Length: 102
Image (tube, rainbow, N blue to C red; front, side, top):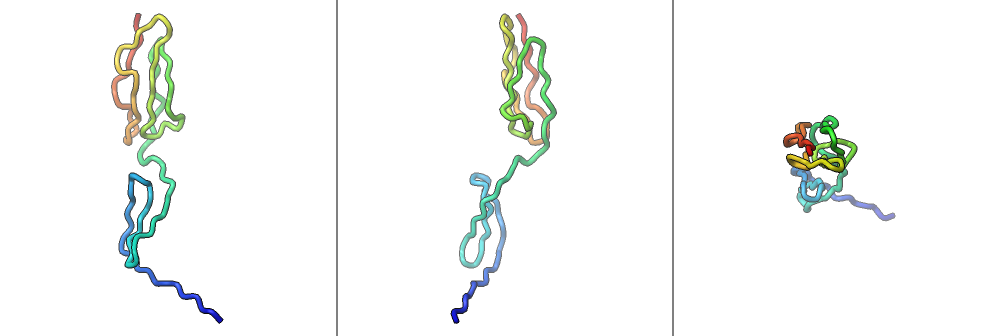
């Protein structure tokens, strides 16, 4: 009868490689990589305000940090201010609200 032997692995520490979203366990025999699905860390933003005579497009309906709000103006109006705003990790839209004037 064949006996299967499994090596004993001692875990030294666990670390996350943010560039690849992999957890890496450094052991006495090398590094074990564990692929993880990791969502945004932080608070969601509320729905951004929409100025008069403007349209809003969101890069994600989830409103997670990193979501980009892009503003455009209705025909006959010009956008004043930044056309984009980004949801921060603290759940606040970055930048001032633009406005559409003619």
